[in-house]
Image (cartoon, one colour):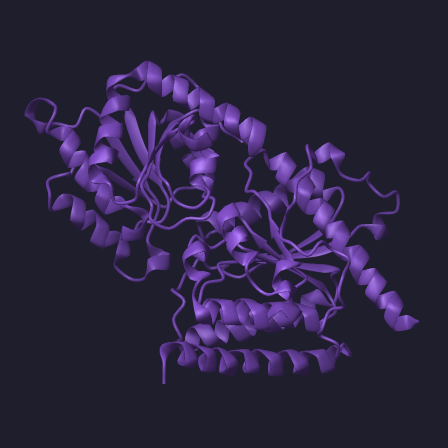
Amino acid sequence: MGSGQRDSEDGFRGLDAVIKIAQSLGRLSGNNDLMPQSTDRPSGATTMRVTSADDARPLPRDSEALPKVLVVGQGPPTTGGIPTYVTELMADPWLRSRVHMDYLNTHPRGVKRPGKLTLANLLDALTHAWTVFGRATRADIVHLNLAATPGLPMLRALLLCAAAKAAGAGVILHAHSNQLEWCLPSLRFRFLIELGSPFYDRLIAVSQVATAQLGEFRPAVVRKTLHLKNGVDHTMFRSPPKDADPPILSFAGTISERKGLIDLRDALLLVARDYPGNALPVRVLIAGDGRQEGPGAFERMTRAYAEVGLDEVEFLGSLERKEVIDLLARTDIFCFPSYLEGAPLSVLEAMASGTAVISTKVADIPSMLDHGRAGILIEPGDVAALAGSIKRLLDDPHERARMGNAARRRIEDEYSQAVMIGSLYHLYLEIVEERGNRQSAVAD
């Protein structure tokens, strides 16, 4: 039996279990029709965009008419891209004045487990599905913010979608995964997304690259696929003069090999050779934890730096939100040599802080950095180019300042949180309208 056939059979078994659970939940709620009706949306994947939050529809006079949205995803004390996105979404005053917001934190104790098939993970998935079902009965829309990657994470995502659909809610599957571009060619992943399409009304990809890949799927997926840019509230981030002595080079994110931290280590060794006593003329601060990578990930990385004599590199661990903002405000150079990304918030936040960014050419990062005009782009794994870029910026503070200013303007012009929130609000209204039309058609 070929690997593709095994993938399909594994996917069939997993999806069959999801369908059976969804049908049981549907019978409990009296909603047995889990197959959403077709809509008049365009056949191709689209990009959600309004020019500003003020372009969205006016606030309804009757507060009872406001859409009711249940947002689901990781939240504090868990750290990372999804918790940051969800926290900012729930705190946005403009959106909260127009939507009744409810929130389900899937990791309230801050415990992250890699997506392995374990009894604990299965129990978590079933518990979350039951909770989503119960709370979705009081919502118009369930907005699921998940890292939908092959295997258990994707099956869990579809299970939560099915639970929300069984409760009668509209469903948004917001795929934040930094591995989405890599996963989409997988037969198993494609199979699950296509056969699971009845359980979601919209599939949001945060990168243009992933959106283009999804555009090659079956029409049932393509017509539900949207590209929605990540955005940041640039007013939260300070852009003071960068006057630390020595300059500060930082990284913020998951502490793991896939983030390119071994490449950063080796690049720092190359940089040090060009200075007296092989001493780095820069303070290096690395923020983040490795909990989602599994036991020992953080310790493995700190050892990797210590073993080559880079004891001066400071591993700060997980930081509070205010501490991250302060770190980026003081940072002169932000290095992000990752191998797998989507549209990383950490890069956008560094740009909003007026920091010069060096990053790899993966997923949407070239577009974010205006194809090299608002930051330096290198190939993944190119240690020499990374070292050369660091040295170039260390030796030229005026270039650092110019690049940081260009990055800040890029955020203000293209990656504003207000624009992202306005686009999302339009999507909520669109799904509520479609849901009302379906209910009217059933009543007739």
